[in-house]
Image 1 (tube, rainbow, N blue to C red):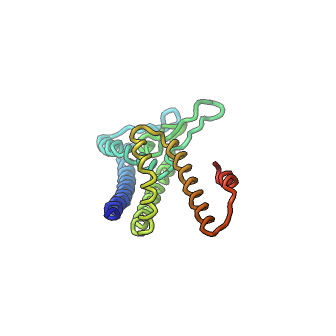
Image 2: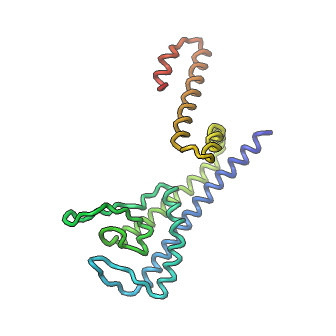
Image 3: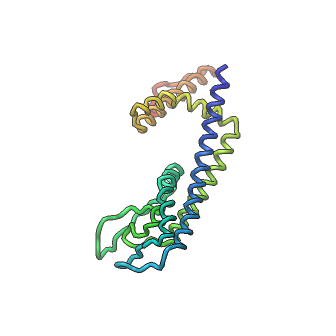
Length: 215
């Protein structure tokens, strides 16, 4: 009676992850298309203090608005998929100054976030890499969902994590959860080892075993 709700919950979670990654991929593809459209509609730009400053035309301003609306979503996708879309911009040694973080997605419409103009090839490479990573993750998510063995593993993980998910909604820091779960895994490992050794009729130094595992 309990197996069906758990399986259904896992089914929903896997599909949720798949559709979420799919949405990230679509956002990356959309911002790529808008990027090329925006650049094509920009009027001739002038250098200002060694950097190109974008001054929009009426047409490019409309496209820019679409890019601005997409930025929170591509940032979320980049964070979720572990994409390095923020680089450090170092000042010239002679001039000096702070090291500036540069968001390469934002650099599509503002290439002067750092100490020098961000090259368009770097921006394009980042967008294309984002799309590629999203496609790979999308494929892995659907393969993971199609394997019933993963449902069993995820079901066990869900049972272990459920109390911590509730506590996290109440403000439990993620690091505390990770530390507690690691200790739970150690306890379960000790129980399994001791049970196996007892089943085989062997003797084991429990103190030495605990020390070996890290208690």
